[in-house]
Image (cartoon, rainbow, N blue to C red; front, side):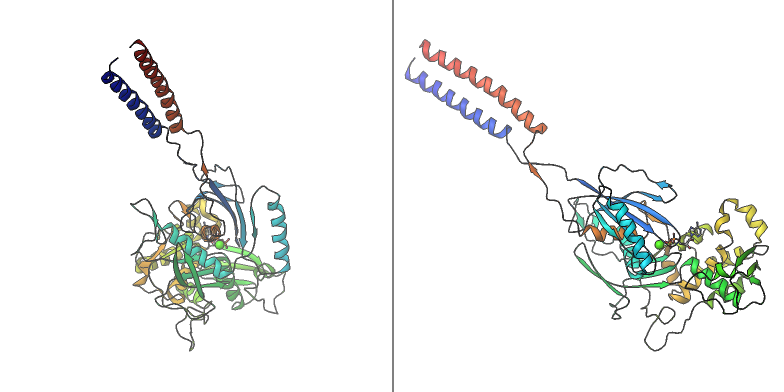
Length: 461
Ligand SMILES: Nc1ncnc2c1ncn2[C@@H]1O[C@H](COP(=O)(O)OP(=O)(O)O)[C@@H](O)[C@H]1O
Ligand SMILES: [Ca+2]
């Protein structure tokens, strides 16, 4: 073999080895493989004054900007009825809340609940009673989270704080209390009603107030008690109940709550007969008497002398606001005039005809007229919405397939306390690696053949 041929063969061999090394390096590129972030679940028990539900939420552990991206997996009532199916593999957080006085009895109940839930393999975060203001604020977070005014998944596939969106206010009507929460034009100076939040890197200064006893059930009780005290004997004429409707209630049952005070003359065992008269104008008057609308000197107010700045922006009205308005088909942004006329005509329908028309709605059927007037008075005379701002109130039960209430907001706030799980860096058996390894073997065999061929070629010369 001549020197020229030797040089060519050497160059060929060197090129071969170099390309093999380059190929190996480019194909079998042993990268750090990111395992998918784990999913976490949260369970929130809502023990309200009239119902108890369990909500299940799910979020990814690699949460964005300090707050997890949470969605509702399912919700169950205590009776066992569930909406949306679960696929639970890991439960992560437990909480429980309700509206009760901070009594030792309540503490005892909470201790029992904690003990029972603590026995399950979950990271139990405690059972506690929310303050009215927390209930309102967490409802506000839920509303704004679901409507993506706090954070939005952008076209750039990133969670971003939307720049030009206005946050919405939240109106919750429970059984025992009602809450109003919104972002006023100027931050509230009154310490009792101001709430501050930092969410997804943005500060929020809100107004929030909870009116105890002004929830739907307790308001109806206050109304009946007022009508009782204005009546004589055991007969109560009820202008908000349909004509032809009648029910009996004992004095003890009527005055079983701190929201109503029994007159000293009333004997607990006395049976009272309540008879509906279906008189909308009289119902309106009776409902108004439950409120004190005078504000005093300390500036703008809601009712009963509670400070409240003027309402601002759009609002979502849920829970009790939604149930009655939905029954009356008034959740489609009807004008105030139309709402009033619908309520007036509904209140004039007699009981026999109502029972025939709505045989499936008997539980609340006799209350819809009272509650409709109650809602109108609360929103217009209480919170000071008017015929113009009325159209800013949206009556709804769900947004983005998720129930509106305080539980999701509570969960979102709580996820801030769960440390973000760092993405695990693991070198593992991934498909890319296998492909690389196979390529490496093929190339090694080819390289061996080339080397053997060159060796022989050298020897024969
Ligand atoms: N389908 C319905 N129609 C009318 N009122 C309802 C309906 N379901 C519940 N309510 C009433 O609406 C009010 C609010 O309910 P909810 O938000 O569940 O109260 P809480 O959270 O205090 O238990 C309660 O007074 C309850 O009795
Ligand atoms: Ca509630």
